[in-house]
Image (cartoon, rainbow, N blue to C red; front, side, top):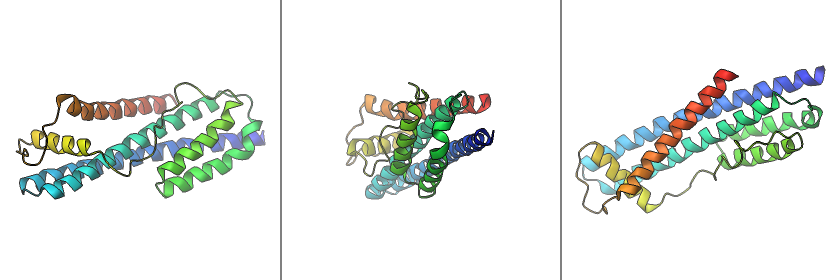
Length: 203
């Protein structure tokens, strides 16, 4: 009985970790909005170089937000499957160490380390048949260290359009499909948030 109680405690810690990831995503969302506002102000002042830097920051924060949401959803999926497992003894010995590794990675905001720790964790869960299609490949890479030029231009154009500003100087005209890509990212974040909320309500 002691082992099962220990496992339940570890599952609780994993749930807490998933909630922490959601909080990190919300923080990134606020920072993204702040950077977009800086883009607007820089464009108004004619500071296109500054606007470009702020646009890069905003895109980076959007990528971080999506990664945190994906990883939170991935972790929720694993925990949900763990709750239904009867064969607990295989993972009891190692889960505590993995939880600690996740906590350390979260403390350092190291997305690559978090993803690698989850990879290790999920490999151990394969033996218990807890790997499901809903969590495979959810974490698509780590936070981008650089941002594509087209994405920066598109974001600057989008902010300018939202506020009715003129930024034609030095910016190629953003294609409709490219702007739609930015909207699609925002929709993806909303869908992930709703999915996490549903998982939490069931838990």
